[in-house]
Length: 261
Image (cartoon, rainbow, N blue to C red; front, side, top):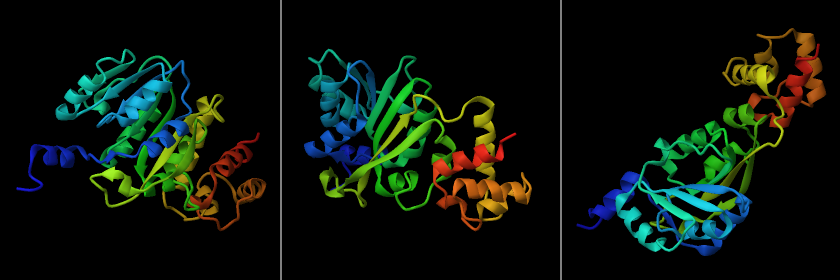
């Protein structure tokens, strides 16, 4: 019956929607800003279109393909490429490289959050460029005018960048929603580190906890009213501003003002 072949079952199980448009692939690789001296780790190479372009710009490509039916033709396709290695394994079980590396992937939507967490935890990661659902990318980059807890809490270490929409009709099978290119870039010099970073993360998590609604109301559990108002003014944050509408750079300034001795 239609839709019940092994290929169809694998596509549903592994969330496979293959990007078939070379121009869109080139947009992803351009957005990644790859360094020729760095290796690239790729999750879900699928049919290898993105893998091929990555191999042209990176020192080497280590691509993890969970589907054995896709891994076999990939091995054959890249047999003559000395800088491409295809591994038939769940990417999320892989250990990040110890040396500096970049991540690039047109990843399955269902594991987007898990892959983002993997990238954020990888100490040697320089950047992560991935194709996600459009809504996911917009929420993480302030594209709706709102900012997520994840973006704000990691802002001292990573810049989150939106690199445009990818029309859903460029994928096969065609998904229900459009996609986008999301890039996380590790800062050369963190905006905060050590104990200061820990205190910043605690403050942000407190404010995003839902108690109070506004930044001012949430901070009342940590600081007195006068100190809060002075810090809000210095950071350019209105007294009634809801936490999600505060730009990450304002959070950094707010933290600095509140922690002045």
